[in-house]
Length: 140
Image (cartoon, rainbow, N blue to C red):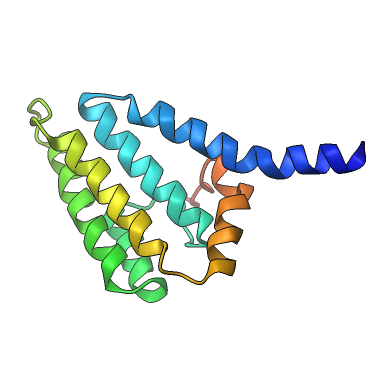
């Protein structure tokens, strides 16, 4: 019985992540671009990149340069441009922006797939990204 509960708990983390991704992929317009950013952020958090709630896409890209090298940071740069145009342009989300954002997430996922098997397995079963990012302290 204890073994069954343990296996259910361990298998529950990847299943919960898949369900979360599926729900995010269904978002459209500006919500779809933001959902792609949330997916990339949580994917990187699973791979032990320190991400806080106050970090922008460019902040996370800078952190990735230290940990993962240029490929992940380059794909985050594409996502940053999409986020900026979606959130700050005042115009409707351009056609294809959601697809481009999710394509950047797929490329980030592919770049992280090159990490050692042990790290990828750790990321798959790491429950940290199921919680919201840490709050950043506000400087006074």
